[in-house]
Length: 136
Image (spheres, rainbow, N blue to C red):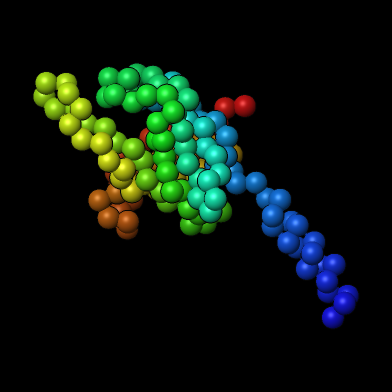
């Protein structure tokens, strides 16, 4: 039994030292919100993403720096997570009419690119897509 203790301690150290690949800064690209930047940080058992730069249509929709854009991000697999995305909607007069968090899925397509999808149902593979690239 004593010979397995170093292996067990090494395994705990290895698991604890693995870095969550979502952590860091991500810049949106390819749509009207391109140039917006979110920084993802650990918050206990989940991760949250805070806007550190607001660009494009996100300005028009009433987003601000330090808004928690993504919250309650939990792992589903090594390259997929579920969480919630902050959505702001304006009425026809341009006044903020609705603020809510919608369920989304995060997929790391490679080490430097992230896709976020909204689904009508979890099983669907269609929906609104946001694309983000990792910043150094």
